[in-house]
Length: 303
Image 1: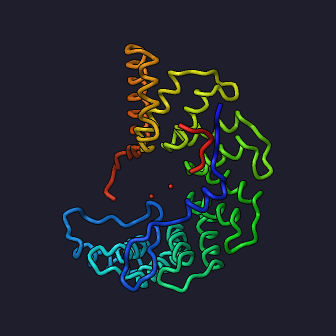
Image 2 (image 1 turned 90 degrees about the vertical axis):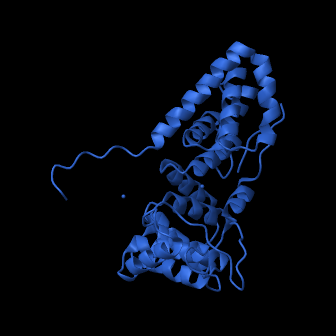
Image 3 (image 1 turned 60 degrees about the vertical axis):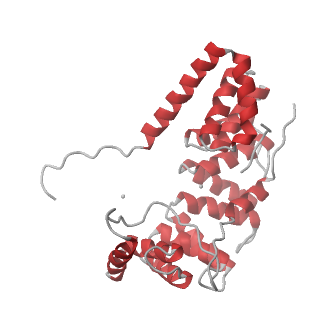
């Protein structure tokens, strides 16, 4: 059995890196944080939307401030301006939005619209984590692992990963699986707990975790027996969830042949049922009728 895994620290460092779109004379843009942006009517042009959001932000509407920062960052309805983006992200933070603190932290981390400051980056990420933003908890964990803007503290980093995973951050759950699988960072090696974390992450839609579950069934890890059908199921789901096709296409076809047409067809049906159930779980719950008028790659095994 050949297994391998990347260093978790390296993976966390890579996860912190952001795309670097070109910006003439500007520094790098921040990654937008979570789903707290103001809604914009779909029939408006970008220029009209920018005017509407600008007016709302000027009135002190916190979600509009966050959205305006994003519009300046991406150049939607206005020329790209990272200094203005940073300003409005800070205003959103000052208005109490966890996502505002998160994006402000990214700005300080990468020097977008400012000269950069690890300490200020840490302070803003910490505030977003205090406000229970899952991305903030995960990011704060990575800063403690790396010692960026704060004294390195791996045990506290693990604790923050646990909190992020409990808040349904799928990458945090997968990272915890890697930690338990290897017994890293002072944690006891626990294959059963590793499987539970990979499964939690997979149920949240993480393709890497789905692939890791397939490895469990491929190699018979922990208390899991070798099971080509389950291996086929989870590799197929990983592929459907966006895991690079080149890494899985051959093994999926080999497993399809091994299972035979009827069994493979049955597992294909299981895959479709899982995907349909996942989509249903993403739908917001129906609101009651009002009676009057009137809120993100560690791996444990190869393909």
